[in-house]
Image (tube, rainbow, N blue to C red; front, side):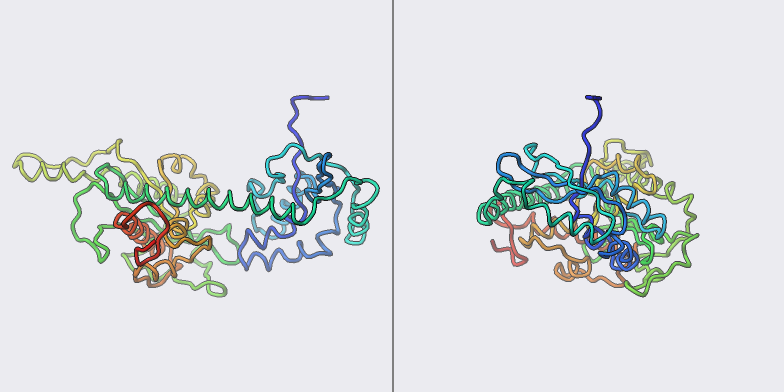
Length: 393
């Protein structure tokens, strides 16, 4: 036996069946339906296992090997060009971190009928220990859910507190908002990139209606300019509200992002400009400020991070010292577990948002929303507790 070999991984069968409906767009779901419907899904070999506690006999669920799931995802991707990530933490079966569950092999299914025959044998002589009562299971589930809820709430409060402190503090930060738009019928085809920048400790003139000086850019991927949305989401690629759109070849996209990030470091600090104005012989030099920290801001930011990684922007991502998600910040302010669209968020915050789904506009609105929520939290009276928009606890 090779003791150094990694333990095999398993996935809950019900998780795999629901995967595209939780992790992909409606357009992709329609494409993947022919693989995940009951008959086609089970019309392939699946090694069926169950996770069971040897002490209580409780069943953790029906699981299948991760290797088979990976092969299944790769097949669907090759035939549809819709990417299904095998790196998502939700994919791997984790019985609440318990090592007490053991995995039992119960058979191999080749069709829905054979799977149904196998599943009907799971409560029988092979599994004689009693299954815990519904009440016990519900209590344990509720306790886990409450712990998770409290941890998420605390993370959101910490995010709001940090945002308020660094936006309104005297330290030198550059806030960069990134938004990526893709073709609605194949989300691997990136069509637009939006970038917005606000530097907290810089001399600002020409402030916009939010009271901040924000620089924005809108890039259309030259090779993908013919891929237009409109069936499922609006096509606003030609309606950039904050300047002139640019067509950039895909091969130059990474260099464009790197250049934008470099520009964030070259803006002179406010005190440097102030000193230059008091001296006739001195002017601020355009030099890189290595001390200025870069902060990434996004709305449902993990989706944009995943796109950037797919494009190979790992070195650019490592330059960000802090990451903020405006969706999570809103959940903390509104004291809700529910997400919110960027359009609705802007409406709640009183931000005028025209032509959303244009990457340049969305990056700008996201940064405006971030700054607005940081200001709300800074001005909120009392202890750090979730508040409504009226500022009351």
